[in-house]
Image (tube, rainbow, N blue to C red; front, side):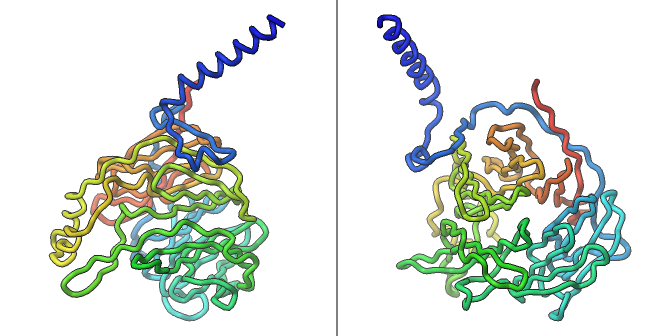
Amino acid sequence: MKIKSWITLFILYFFVTISCEFSPEIKIPEDIAAMEHVAVFSGKEAPKGAVSFERVTSFGDTEDFYFGRLGDIAVDDEGRIYLADSREGFIHIFQGDGSYIRSAGSKGGGPGEFQTINSIDIDGSYLYVMDLIQRRLTAFRLDDFSLAFTLTPGDENNGISGNPTAFSTLSDGNFLVFYSSVIQEDDAVFRQEKASVIDRSGRVIHDNIFTFKPSRVTYLETDQGFVNIHFPFICRPVTHTGPNHQLYYGFNDRIFIQIFDMDGNYRRAIYYDHPNVPLNRQHFLDQYRQNELIYEALRRFEMPARMHAFSGIIVDDENRIWINIVNDDYDTAEWWILDDDGSRLAVFEQPARKSVQFVKNGYMYVIEDDEKGAREMVKYRVILSLES
């Protein structure tokens, strides 16, 4: 009996000691503490390793074509790269070494033509392209890039509200389509984003399977009326559909990523106790100093005390999670690479003008400026070194 009591006291002492050692360092919000299957980490904990990058090739203007505006990117299993020119209505296709293959699509309103391109994706058979203005999803065959079919991804008659803004292909051949609409609550206006599952005929299979926390729409009152401007310091939902056909979602007021399956079921989450940096009010005022109307309106605007926590999520084909963390240097972008379990593998920084777009097959694709100041897509080999 005495032995059992001693063991019980030892176990109790052990857990109390562990709790006292770690609990003060990691602050968990009440709503997150009440959830199940949440991996919790301290932002002060050092990463497990380091990462470096080796430039491989670039994709930019040539004698045969030029980019109007670099848009979305997709990479197939053979390493071919698909780059959307969102303004000119083309998808340019390259070999992995940077050599040009051909283009698909064109500017216009007919079949296989686009007013704008806001999202592209691929599966084993098709290249899919979404045109926000025409509310249309177009499929090209991958073997010869001929037009295969088009569809309209749902409408109000199917319980869908808002405009389609992005999509992802699913393993069953259907599509997860994201919609954005504006709603009003009392005197405030919000942007509401939802996602529904659509089949290849455009029919809604599951309407509003995901509904994300709405973000505030910012209106500035000027002498000429109200102007709607999207400021980065306004918190919003950030989503990414991973290669494992799971949805990664976080409202970016904190580093809290929830992971769902494509039936809308919550699976697990990752939380980092990491402080949001203070907002530099003067920095944002300086961005509009040349526009007197907006500058004066923004000067009267009540900005938040702190910035949002992160700007973007990318999940690579090894289920590693890349998060663009907001720091106090507006000229620098900070990225964390997390393992699938949420533990931090590496941290790196790069100039804010470089924009990481996609990671697959051990390569990172970044929009940046060339030596002449023109925008191009650059392919880097990812070299991740972990401590043994």
